[in-house]
Image 1 (cartoon, rainbow, N blue to C red):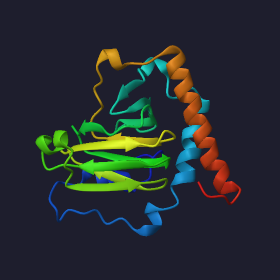
Image 2 (image 1 turned 60 degrees about the vertical axis):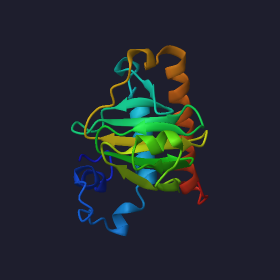
Image 3 (image 1 turned 180 degrees about the horizontal axis):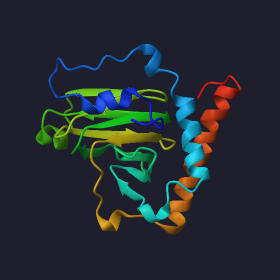
Image 4 (image 1 turned 135 degrees about the horizontal axis):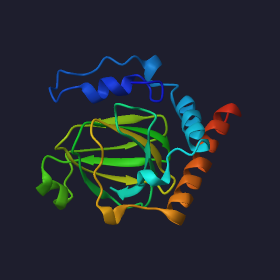
Length: 194
């Protein structure tokens, strides 16, 4: 993976579904990535990335802003669009990096359990935490209203054309993301908690 995302993301995306295939990720590489990533994202936003013509879209309760910082893995800046538990049928290996806010994740044995609201696993994640998901995993997420994430995957998200955003919605989402990213960068520089 190029320098846009932390190196451990590639190992998480390449792991198999075998329970014994757990990537060896040292604590030193799984921490301390938040501010450098926020600064890279701010740089991308300053240069007009993500571009509106790359079709920002709504999916799984988030506005997805496509990024081209990684030529191999489709990568998106995700901004919370709603704060309700939203089903998500994972179609490709994915890694979610938490930038701001929190997210509640529920995983289910099968889609029947998903729609019955009976999770097999539930956990909350906050800033500078991450999780990975395998294809075929029925899950649901609920983000706090200030939720900002980066999601990398092995395949692009394929939205419905009716879910594409543009114009004012796109500009407002980019501004919301920029404000949150500036807060992340400033909180560490000033010694505060984010």
